[in-house]
Amino acid sequence: MADDGSISHFETMGFNPLFMDTNAIIAELERDFISKVPAEKITNVFFYGASCSSNERKAVVANALKHVFKQSEVMVDHDMLAAARALCGNKPGFAAILGTGANTCYYDGNYIVENIPALGFILGDEGSGAYIGRMIVREFIYKTLPAELSQKFYQTYQLTKDDIFAAVYSKPLPNRFLAQFATFATRNIEHPYIIAILEKAFDDFFTNHICRYDKHTEFPVGFVGSVAYYHSDILKRVATKYNVTVGTIVKEPISELTQYHVGLLKSSPSI
Image: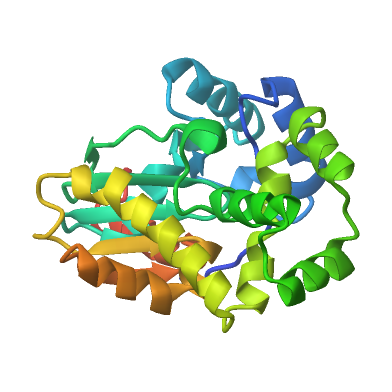
């Protein structure tokens, strides 16, 4: 936010401390971000990212940000907290991420106080893009997709079983590979077979995540992510089976998160 109150938005690549070290993040920031906004004009940096859950991983990102933004106060935390603050602001509630992966938490209005473990796309991620994509790919390989859907799938992606096996078992980022097929569900959302797949995925999500929180019927559950955003009607319908109230659903949290921090800075300029 500038001194005149105006807000500007810029995009960079994502920074994940599991896959990038401090020097790599510095190089990317100096190459991309600094050309758009001079570092000396930045007074506060709030960074939320995947894998920023331990002090060691947070330090990888924080050290890079402090190197580039030398005059700034720097805060680094997990993307789940970003979702909670964007969705709930300063009120208690549940927040969920349903994008490539899945995660949930109970938020007390300031911090996450309870989190059902997110097990990743191999052991969990129920309801996520990777989970839905895996269901579709499995049905395609087993030849249990209805013929018209199977034909559409092959025409769209031109993938054989060997191609899929190579991408899932031998190449990097198999979760992203699987998650791309969630868009196939979106494009064919009217088909009863796709509806059944999505309902199953969301049933698994509520059963294994939301319903394990003691207060899951007392507060609304807000959602961040493309899967929740594009399939909100089915998501809400499944939620009613579990007496869960669905709150705000946003594709990306950045606008709401920006407003959250603008409010904090106005009330406490030293933050």
